Length: 550
Image (cartoon, rainbow, N blue to C red; front, side, top):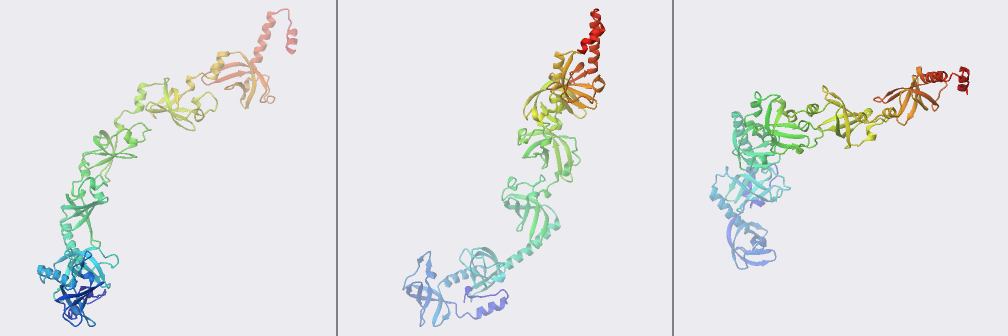
């Protein structure tokens, strides 16, 4: 009986199974036999009994080549009989040699012996055959394996030797025992480390994207990528190589899962505590640009601390979209500390605070009344923002054109070049008001060039209001006749479109307004009539009135 003949269930009396298997072994002795015949897959061997024993051809085949021929003498192991034919094996002779070498090497005290090999077969679901690199085979019962039959073939395992029996040429091993002993040893060692609560040196075994595994003299722990640097999550491959020695501190140990959590940064002085009393909001410090993100840049203080330089704090230019447009990786810059929370490990800095404000610079170089060149930056419902150098000024719809109700959206598009006049600077609110109307002639100014006070004009009524009526003078200019200037006109008798005459009484070129009066027209006509009478003494008043009636 050999290793492959042992059948075991999940629940069994291991000692009884071994004794029964040893007692039932019929012979297991090695004898010389002569190959009588090789026929197909069968090899008949004369072992001195009435009937030849039979081997499978595979037992004497190595790498596809048959090692023996008919007539050759080979050693075989007798293992009882199957019917009348003796049960023999050449392979078991080779295994016995491996077994004997194992016993010679380790003796009979094998409880501390650990073997390593590959699972080569599953026997009747009772266990696994494991073969080491020297070709020695071991039997690992299912209940001692911590393995499932499915997918076990080819798996490399380590296991403890449980029993060795020379008469049976069998070695029973247990992966379960090795694992459980390892757990006990790990628990004990971790407990010792936790009790000391001191930094300990280890060797980096493996580096992954999420951290690195560190060997602490036989037990492995994981340093998460958050626990490598006070900067926050980092790629461990940028800091260490496998095989490097590193000092760590144990953070926690999950005994049930055998998970040991380690930290590199916890074993180092906390740089945040070092700056608690050395740095405060408003300080100017020199930093190095260490990383870029779409929302800004990270800066390195040089002591494992990183701060955030938000894109809004890089420049006074509100149109900056990418921090790389102004900064380069590794560049040293001076910044101002604008937020510092040591407990939350938060540091925010500003580059623009150390630069002159564009508004302050603008007010040094410009004043109300200046005409400057700009570019349309943003269009809104109420107007447009015009960029002048590094600042934006507001061009309100009312200041964009003399054309009534015109909007910037209808006149301009983003990026258009415009010339504007500064009409107001609010230093407190840092607002700049602009005008295009102020640098172009108003329709009232053009009207003034062609008319003077006292001129009589004629036009259709464009609109009627409670306070008066508007006469259309041209496409962009109306004249207002207030109610008190109606004269002989009756409000209830006039209508839109009706043409009337009036006298120009006021021209406001700045506000683009023209005041008219029908009442004054009547008075002016009376004065002219009287003057005409005085100039022509031969004409009677009756004649003059008669001419007017005509």
